[in-house]
Length: 275
Image (cartoon, rainbow, N blue to C red; front, side):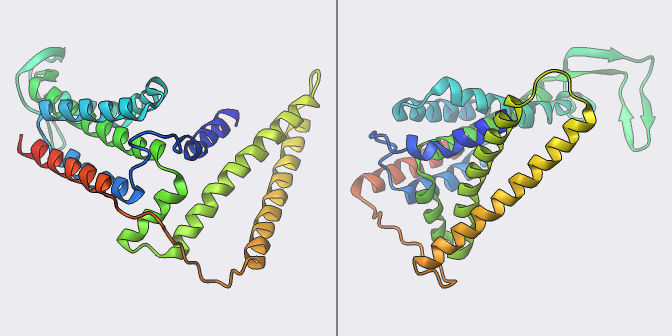
């Protein structure tokens, strides 16, 4: 519970961290939103291993310019890329799935065999082509997550949500996302405070049945408190003129710097695709 709460708070506080004065934080959120979609397409299209490495270096240089905590952010990136970009596709490196020259043999049989619709070769191992496939997928996931987190950690959440209006997302849906985002943070704080209060009142050995009864009571308390927060939020919105229609306004306009950044991103993507 504590770790989950800390994770939610770290994401929530990125909006405050994104107000620092440097080049990337000052870019229009709409430009960042367009760049995110464009780079996601470029990364998914590029199938050259060397080009993916250049994209990795390019994104890393943006992290340096943004003056983010590179070690902490890249630790999260490596974890996600390792799970979804390496372990999931690791079987593709075997000659059973990707034929090719075996560079590291794992197991050998007396002769090839056939199981259902699969042909099992006599030697099973990692192939050059298979490792290239895994490397490409890993770098695609790694670069996609890296660029996405760069946008998240350099853009205030409300401004980023407003940029969704460029693709005609309804305002009501955006307001639901914003309120849910705020509420998740409040709920995590409530759970954390409840946990500490619960822990401070325990001493000695307690029966499992008593623990379950206490936890059940706390869950009901958290539910009641969340309902109160929902009602108070709705009443506050009504008192400020809410009548069921939500209009989100964004006062940010494109500047020459935004246009230059967008051109650099666009040209870089073309170069990566043609490289």
